[in-house]
Amino acid sequence: MKYFGALILIITCTSLSAKPKSLLMMYRDYHAVADTDTVKPIRKSSASIGVTYGTDALFFGRTGPIKYPFMSTDLVINSKPGFFVYGSALKVLGYKPLVDEIDIGGGYYYRASKKYTGTISYTRFIFNKEANIIKSASSNDINWKNTFDWKLFKTSLTADYLFGKSDDIFTTITASKYYESKFSIFNDQDFLSINPAVSMILGTQNFVQRYADDHNRKLEFYNIADKNARERNSRFNMLNYSFKIPLAYNTPHYTLEASWKYSIPVNVEGILRNRKESFFNFTFYYVFY
Image 1 (cartoon, rainbow, N blue to C red):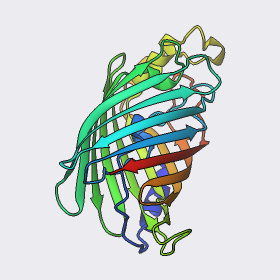
Image 2: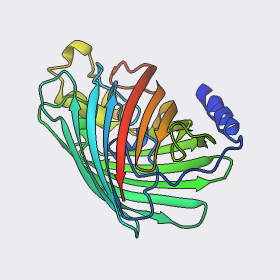
Image 3: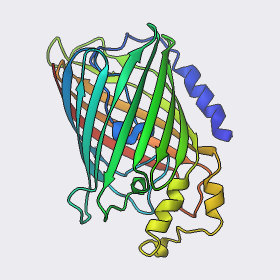
Image 4: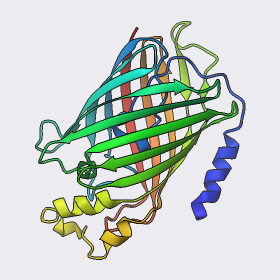
């Protein structure tokens, strides 16, 4: 629990004052729910298209035995009452499948009060048979995220139930602080924003064992399999601590975002050899009203 103190410290530090958050927000990065800054949809009818490049595929605090840089494209359609549908396609760069993964899903955004909001959604993961990313051991995700705005900072509690080839449950706790520039860059409608966040993930990791079973021959060299790992993977444990700093350039219709994330995996089973790692993501998305 040595990192827990650091988590509390960062949560405390985020209580500095800042300009209120912009309305230019959308539900995005849903294909990796626990590892992203998922935010609420715009409360009006809209559609958005996004493209993301990432240096490695991270899934609930775990990565594969080697790095899998990727490109993904995303489409999100929001309705004014709060319902939304989405789809995405992911390609791991440098490997054979033309498309490694397609995700489709939908959900509902609700506002229980001025400070308390949430989303509930279902996502179906469809993988190419040759996909090697660790996420390929799961096929369905029910996600329930609850966010509370304390004004000084925001906290969120997210629950995920994954089922299909393997069954897992996760709890993700995140604290974040949004800052927005008081100045414009090129015109009076653009601005910069930064949303530093700290997260921790607790859960089971049966998907790791399933991934080892599915890829045992291919990954024998990496010694990913462990005969005693199956029982340990089914325990509900701390899995990961992470720190993320996304910096974005925003306009009324599009956003360019670069983010750095530092991941600290703990209780790694199956000799997966996950270590502390930095991740870089670059995202562009455009919103149609």
